[in-house]
Every structure is written in structure tokens, then in C-alpha cells.
Image 1 (spheres, rainbow, N blue to C red):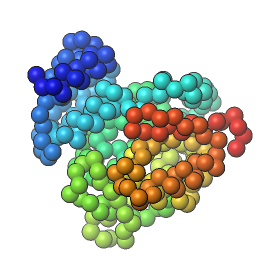
Image 2 (cartoon, helix red, strand yellow):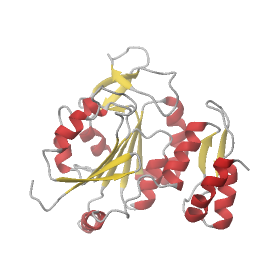
Image 3 (cartoon, rainbow, N blue to C red):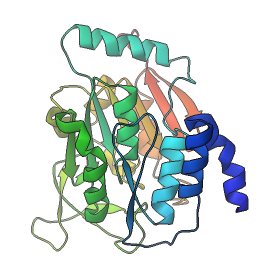
Image 4 (cartoon, rainbow, N blue to C red):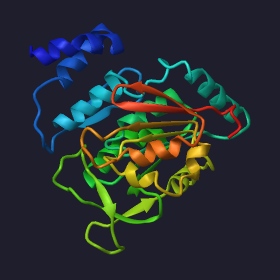
Amino acid sequence: MTKKLIRRLPNYIVRFGVLDGIRLAWQVERAVEKKSDVIRPYRVPGYASEVWLRDTVSDHSIFWQCLVMEQYALDRFPHTARLEEYYHSELAAGRLPVVVDCGGNIGLASLWFAKRFPEARIVVVEPDGDNFSLLERNLAHLGNRVQMVRGGVWPESGWLRIRNPDSGSAAFQVEWASEGSPGALRAYTLDELCKLGGGNSPFIVKIDIEGAQSELFKRNTDWVSRTNLITLELDDWLMPWQGTSRSFFSCVGQYPFEYLLGGESIFCYRDVGAGI
């Protein structure tokens, strides 16, 4: 039994119970490669369908972050009570809240949000083809509750491309491209993605886009004023002195958000009662 497995085992037991926790820890916390074509299913308590992972460090790390440690867990924050009230008020009014997952990778964050808000619509966007194929497999059982979009998020609609295709499945970065150029992918605005989910305003926007937030928050940001919760993984540590978070803070600072830190993410709750 490795030191890593021993160290992480209590977290698995707390999350999934003794038997399932030990089983999953033994299955997931084993030595894997940086790249692999082997894909395996895992039975995870609380989830209606099997979770599929490649035998890679990246996929197993994302499983740990999203489903074991629950990186996006909201109940630890007092602000979530008001978020829940808004969620139920929208449902009572016949409107479906829309969660937009920008940078969906293999779909585990979307899977978690779909479980946490079982009547919300999920729109998930991911640029990489291999990631997207696995995302489709992990989210297929959700049916029309989820819209899966191959592409990237940007302040304007248009075309993007992955500029670092050899970086690894959890580190892809996108840049503006011309239509028809090699590897071109559709660029979607937040409003376009929200409409794909059947809404006009996003309920929650989760952002993990490897520095592209620098562009996303520079312009066409009216959606920010209509979003109840924005959760963002900051990338300044990964891209020192590139200012990837500056436009984000400049933008959200114009609105009545309150900020909480959780793991690698910042959670920005909009004060819906502030009238702004």
C-alpha cells in the first residue's frame, strides 16, 4: 500500500463509506501513466451511472478533486442558503436554472453540479476531442438535462484553436483563430451557452479555462451582472506575471459580489438583494 493511498484513504471513507471508500481508493489511487488509451469504469456511490476514467494522472487527479474532495462543494459557505432560495424560487416560477461549465474536461464537475442541483440544466463546453469523448460518456445518462458543446468560451463568438496540444489533458489553452484554420473550434459567448441550456441568465458559471479568463472578462461582460455564482480557478501561479486574473477582478469588482476561497477556486456570490 503506497503512502499516497494511506494518506488519502480516510477521505474516501468519509465520502463514500467504509467498504466503497476502501474499494475506490484501492482502484483509483494506484500508479498510472501521464498518457494512456486505457479507459475503465468505476462505480461511485451517489451517482446513477459509472464514472469513466483513463489510466492517467490527470483523470485520476480530477476524480480526487471533483468527486472525493468535492472541490465545488457549496454547503460550507453561509452564502449558499440564499443561492438555494433563488434556485427554488426559479423552479417555482417555472424557470430552469442553468449551470454553465467552462472547461469541462472529462465532465466530472458537471456530474457533481448535476447531482447537487438535480433540476438544473447543465451546459458544458470543452475544446479537446479526447476529453470531450470521455465527457460525453460520463454525462450521457443525464439525457436532455445536459448540453455538451465542443469548443471554447470567449467574449465573442468566432473560432479558437488549442495552442499547446502537447501540454496534457488538463492544461489545454486556447487562442483566437480564423475559420477553416487547422484545428479551428467554435468560440461561444456565455450568453450563447446559456441559451443552449434554455435560459437567459446563468445561475452558476464554473470557469477553469487555463488563463483564457484574461480575455473572457475584458469585454461583453453583461452576463456577470446576471449570474448568481461564479467560481473560478485562478491561474496566476501557473502563468506568473501574465496578469490572467486582472480583468476578472476589475470586472466583478463593479458588482455586489462577496468572495470566498475554497481549495484552488474562488467563489463569487452575487448579492441578489443589492439591486445592482
